[in-house]
Image (cartoon, rainbow, N blue to C red; front, top):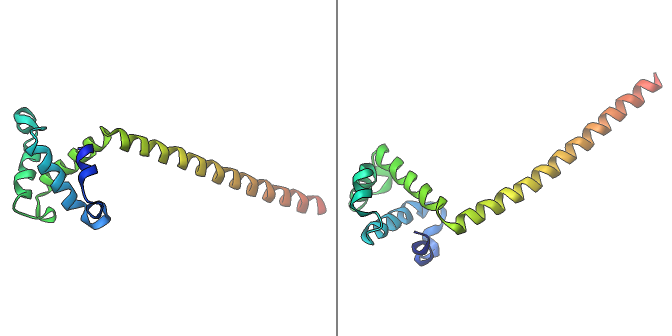
Length: 123
């Protein structure tokens, strides 16, 4: 799927277009035989979703088919080296932001405590 994402027009990867992107990826994946008969038999809801997506829109799918499609997309994304690398960068970036926020709160607490101690000493 990762190579299929590279072929996809950038406009298909924007917020509101993700159902079309999901349809495109799933149908390409199945057409290329990457699912195979065993995978289709093992995942009937995904097969159902692929059949329904040929004739209907994502928002009209039954919940079971939407869930199967979402689970498949998550599995494919998790298998992507590019996605894993981006997730790791996100985690590292967030860790830095969280550490800065903890430090800021620690400093504020120390200032409050120092202010309380100073006020108590004046009394």
